Image 1 (spheres, helix red, strand yellow):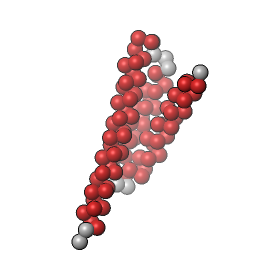
Image 2 (spheres, rainbow, N blue to C red):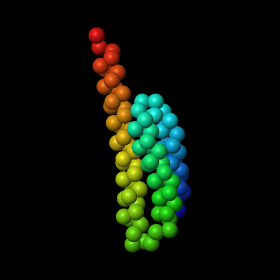
Image 3 (cartoon, rainbow, N blue to C red):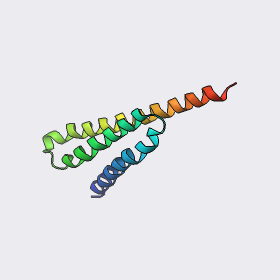
Amino acid sequence: MIHIYVVYVLGLVFAALFVLLARGMSKIARRYAAVSYCCAALWIICAPIFFFMPTGYDGAFERGLGVIAVVWTVTFAWMLVSVAQNRAHTTHP
């Protein structure tokens, strides 16, 4: 029973995360913000559709939503690594 409420909350959290963090990501590089906004748009459009999918297709569709989350996570991680590398190069004499 609680599972469906967790799914709703996580869906909203992901959408908010993609949108709200894009602004900060744009300060590092516009491409990171572009990926974040694209993930947000895909998520906001596709996530509600999941609830109306027939049982035979919802697993595949859920994996597609997972791909969106993974793309955003990899992009965010790549951004963090690039910032750390840039900082390491600028702080050493």
